[in-house]
Length: 297
Image (cartoon, rainbow, N blue to C red; front, side, top):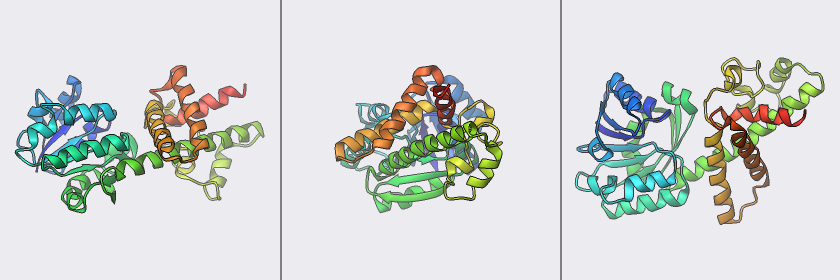
């Protein structure tokens, strides 16, 4: 397939490279010239603008920072919906954004006769590089079936969550739970240290007990417990704390709009805000452990 890929950041670039590896013809665009150079080195092509990157494409994929960027790229005059409505590609947005923005962009795409999926991902930069991402997909069943082979070139687990916006809804619920879980694991290991326990022994025990979770067994925030976790590399991301803060804020906006009680998420959000305010927003989100540990001194 001919694929236009807009947004070649820490996630988008390896995703686009995996599409090239799968045999697709990929033309990318990003504001960062170095990212476009990296795509050419991976075998892709680059364009001078987003509109040029999607000319003649069968599929258009976007991986952008926030809802306002997605709205800008798709909805403005000369945006992706405007320039592609004559060629009818499948549109796939893999950004993590608010549900309202996802549904608004999909509705405009539908008016123009275009099918669109919201398909945010989980798995971090390692998943993007290894092609093992989980895709949470919203959109029609027909659009999902059309897009699934493309998503399978970038991910391992491809789920149809429901209609437009459902993918984003799953993603913000997932990341809200992960944020809470990571704080809980961090608190447990901090308490264990104060009680004189060995972290590696605690990890080995709890990884087989009822407190086990992905955050504990695979991504433990206590340094020296999991060799492959960001905590073993001075919290190099991974998934940046500032992105987790963005996602938890999305969950809290949705919770307020729907009247859902999320007091633990609200507390976790305050912790991640403090982490970012302290200058660690570009560290992995598991760095909340280090911030919490500092509060007890």
